[in-house]
Amino acid sequence: LGLIVGGVDIQLAAYCIGLSEIGEMSAQPFKTGGFFYWPMTPPLKTGPEETHPGSTLFDAQGFGKRRPEGIFTDTATRYLDAQVVAKESSLAFNFRRKTDGSLSDQTHSHLPEDVMKLMLGKTGAMIARNAENIVKGLIPLEPYMVNHKTTACEFCDYADICRIGEVEHDVYRQIPPLTRRDLIDECRKPDGD
Image (cartoon, rainbow, N blue to C red):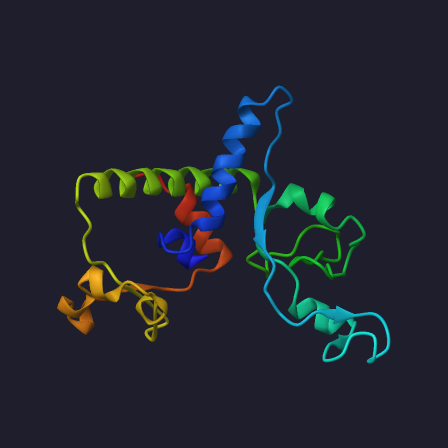
């Protein structure tokens, strides 16, 4: 969540924004309920070892480690996994229902619909600002660090053209992890605060 709000991990949010705009203009309007990616891990198998060499048998715990990662609206949960009842967790998606059947706030995956809309709006505005700055030739060096150790620079193929060598190592933006409550508060905060 922190990487989305921090303007780093915005690819899926950008796709969701585009799809939302298409949905609003469509002859049959639709709303997006969230965005996901499926982590690339070894395939699950449902048959004997010789049928699928090197894979592991299907089990709920193993599947839970391979479930889609992403963010979705609270209302989308009824379409994503309608089988989840009170005091149960979804096998396929990261949400759980409390004893009264309402959604638990313990996961970061589901957000109130208004917060999802605000988050996508703020992300879209950030993308527009960044695009305008790139067109103007304003491309500041603003490397980031997550948890005081991981940087995007470690995985980037463009170090030679971005001038990262000119940056002091103590100027990295720190992107703190956000709780679900932090994200909700950040999204509901008026722009400029």
